[in-house]
Amino acid sequence: MQEEFQLGVLGSSKKQSFFTDRLFQLFDSNKDGVIEFGEFIRGLSVFHPSAPQAQKADFAFRLYDICQRGFMERDEVREMVLALLNESDLVLSHDIIEVVIDKTFEEADSKGDGRIDPEEWQDFVGRKPILLRNMNIPYLKDLNRQFPCFKQTSGIEDYTSSSSPEKDNSSSLEGQSQQCQHQYYANKRDNL
Ligand SMILES: [Ca+2]
Ligand SMILES: [Ca+2]
Image 1: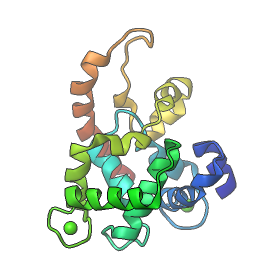
Image 2: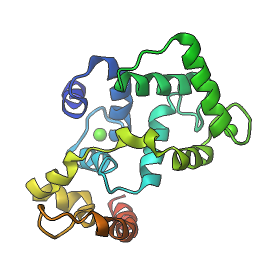
Image 3: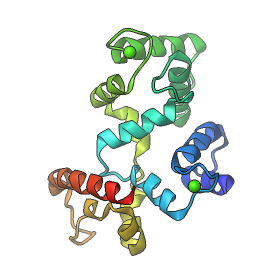
Image 4: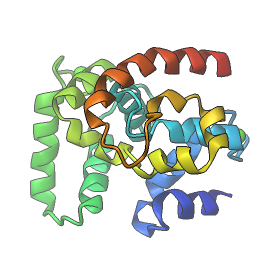
């Protein structure tokens, strides 16, 4: 199942298998080593383009918090930087990567304790939303239309517009997604 998951979500990219493992762990909320349909849908809903940014940031934090201690230290930030570089096929020297990590701590570690905690992280990605760009799967918007069951079980039906797919509704999307935020959390509570 883990292998299938990797193929499905990340297109079988070997170099990212480390984070695929982490993704798998995060999706598998009851920790039984299997991703049930409900877990899959709940996990995937975070990657919906209209899911709240704070929720994406929270998920990304848990993804990069490799040691799962509730904060990120230098080694974890290094893994994150390497993963983001990998994704953009950028190759940087060891020295430059260390500079990038220094810079990340300079900007993110506002309390200056050498750790990035969830509060600092939310603030940091609020200023650098590009860090969450891999938290969007635009295809999910189509998925809602193609698979009505996805719509019903995911609790994110309000994210998609009821108007025709061809129509550009980007202008109304922002206000709509704010409304949905409350709806989402309401649904989430019901599901728990
Ligand atoms: Ca499970
Ligand atoms: Ca800190």
